[in-house]
Image 1: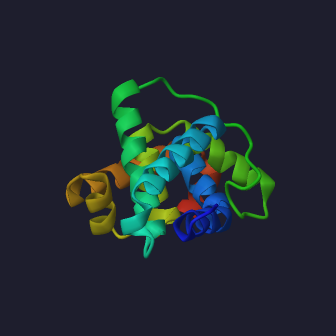
Image 2: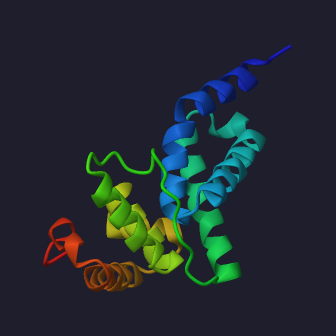
Length: 165
C-alpha cells in the first residue's frame, strides 16, 4: 500500500526530474555523474520527505549543489570532455550549445558550478555564495575569472558572454 508521502514524493520526482537532471549535468559536465548527483539528492529528499514536502525543490537543489561541491573538493580531477546532452540547454543553435558545452568542460568544477548557479539558475552573487558556502567576494572573483577564461578559450562566445560581464 502506497502512503500519501510516497505518492507525493513520486509525483515530485516525475514532475521535476528532467529539470533537476539538466542542472546536474551543467554542474558536473558529465551525464553519468549528473545522474548520480540527482539520485543522491533525491535519496536525501526521500529520507526527509516528511519535513520538506512543502518545498522539496529548494531542498533537492541545495543537496545537489552541496554534493557536487563535496565531489569536486574530493577528486580535483583533470578536465574531462562533455558528451552532447539533448536536454542540457534549450538553445536552438546546436553549434553554440556544443561550443558552450566544450568551453564549460574546460573550466574548473568550481568555476563551472558558480557560472551555472549565477547564469543558469539565475541566483544572485549573495545567494550563490550562501548556497556554496563561499564568500560573496569569492563568487565575484570566480565568476570574473571563469568568464575571462571562456572569452580566451572560445572567442566566438564573446557576444553571448558580453564584454563587461
